[in-house]
Image (cartoon, one colour):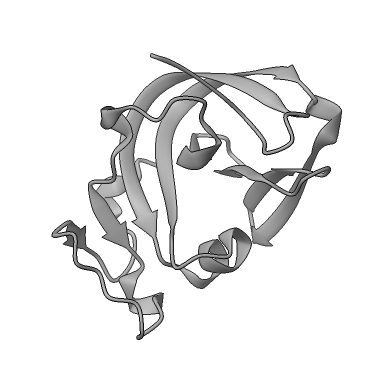
Length: 138
């Protein structure tokens, strides 16, 4: 399957091909801070192919934890994706996509042990204290 997306200002655009492993709402402190929200909805793709359509020179990365990077547009700051140094998967910011289809709906909440106590999860999705080992094939 092929997906296209871009940053907020349009300087960076991409096309990603691959199979979705899972979609989760991440409540870890790093995702919350980098998105400025209670959670970040991320679609994880294993061994994806990414074609940068424009603005590859506008992409900046930040190593948020050892061996794990976050890519964003240096012009508008929009988060695009996260990935480990071994590139075995990409955690794509669902809201950077041009078209968010039903298959990109979250199936779980992860790192709920880190969520703010004032935020309640009321959607009925499965909740995990951390990322379940069965979710990542690295």
